[in-house]
Image 1 (tube, rainbow, N blue to C red):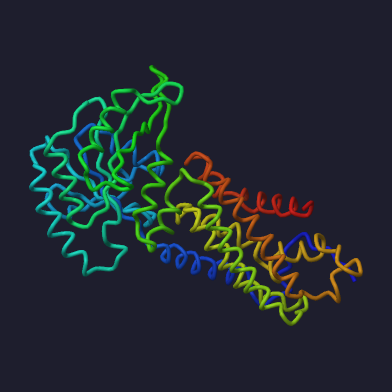
Image 2 (cartoon, one colour):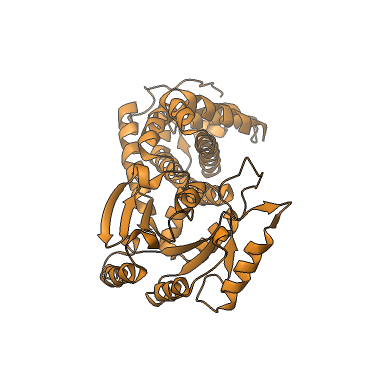
Amino acid sequence: MSMTVDKPDSGVTDLGRGEVESLFAQRLAEAFASLGCFNLAVFGKTGVGKSTLVNAIFGTQVAETGLGKPVTRGLVYYRHPGGLLGLYDSEGFETGTSGDEILAGLRTFVGDSRERPIDQQIHAAWYLVRWSDRRFEDRQADFVRALSDLGLPVVLVITQVPSRDGVPHPEAVELAAYIESLGLPLRPAGRALLTNALEDPFTGAPVFGLQELLDATYLVVPEVATAALTAVQILDWERKRQAAKKIINQSVAFAAGVGAAPIPFSDAALLVPTQVTMIARITAAYGLPPDRSRALAAAGAVVLTGGATMAGRYLATNLLKAVPGGAVASSAISAGVAGTLTRAVGMSWARVCEYALGLSPADRDRFLAGTGPKDLFMTFLRERRKD
């Protein structure tokens, strides 16, 4: 027996499109909430390049788009609307608020925060030094030590470092060596990291050192914050892919359990909750803006309407005919078929998320607002037929 299904058939399941969309919205909210929040504190003098560095790694103007709330003297907390990133931003030392005053407020804040959930605590601190200052003062060293004494893992970053042919400016290297010689409690391994977050079109100085800074940050954050960090950072795509792969593998195993006793196509709606949850978790893992993710969810719900999904039915009837007997055995979805369908859906959806995240904000908005996600999803799904 063979059949071809290229369009969703609302008559094959008791789950209507509205119900699937509602389920997706619920699962999406749960997926984002489960990621928690990565909280980063950034310190350094005015003009050191704090915003530029944060934007280069997280791809967003946190202080401009987030809601700023003073948490102690000299320290403002910005929570990005997406909810995955919190930024503690300090005033520069020369603005009239001394380092001692900031530290006094921090001691109280950090002490109080230990009674709060871990996703409301500071997970890492970046201390920034501008290479062109060509010096590192005693009070800066004392400030770093004090941050460490508060239990904050401190990553020291030398910013705006020019380089040529992959070799950083020798005076920046010399400054880093001097700072490292002080034996400060820096992470990782007492090192000072050299970075340049913005290409200089005049001198041609390239961007460099950002991946090393991100890797160092992963080494110091608690495990509970790594999922949020992976979702919100825009630098390391492989970490996002690995997070999506883990979600897909878990969903495949669950779907295979659903199909442990072969189920007929008419009962394929049993797979819908598993696949909806998987797609929601993948969307969150890639860190797509939640509001736009809901637009993407609406397009995805079209795909998910009918049977296990329109995609699942398409695969089962058109992509999985090469099984013993030449057709889907007895028109039933077995554990193997259920797992294969779910993996195909998950991998295709991950590619859609990655494509959307790679667009400029304006292009991403246009893409998510139309039929682009659904169309691209089906394109990727058909490509898997060739595998």
